[in-house]
Length: 247
Image: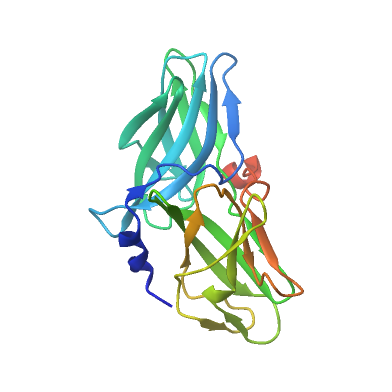
């Protein structure tokens, strides 16, 4: 397949935030309410070891709020930029190390108390042979005729024999169930029993209708045991035990 970098020149405009990708999370201090509608990671042109995380936020009953993001190692990140979208709605940009995992975001409304919201868990799905984790959308690109989406995944062998892990086996489904085959991806890997792919890998889909809203990633679409990751229902919230540990 073509190399992943070739998807970039094919599209003219970057879509700031996709309509599908997790269900909203929210919390309140008793007055102000903060809502997280989703996030998307984008390449950071100034440093290959970092990326941009855009968080789509909503704020009710407060004029504004500041945000801090906490990763799995308890490192704290302050926003690099805020981009207002509409009244109470804005994108919060963070510059973070590539492939970071997060556990918590803190919003502090003007005149209010800090509000902690547990982050989304990494969705996973599998069958008796293969387990796939989806680390989200890393690029969402748009031109006047079509859109293109890049997702980051990792495969793990669940069985007792070698498993072939190939980008050609991925399909992206829209809200009507229309399957879009992968057009760009990683080199096929052979995964030994008990092992996972050496790194996270990227799978790209282009030629997606502007009317389509991606809702699921499927591996082995035409097989008897397809692996399905739903972009809404499979993005559950981390538990307090996962975020803070056991007492």
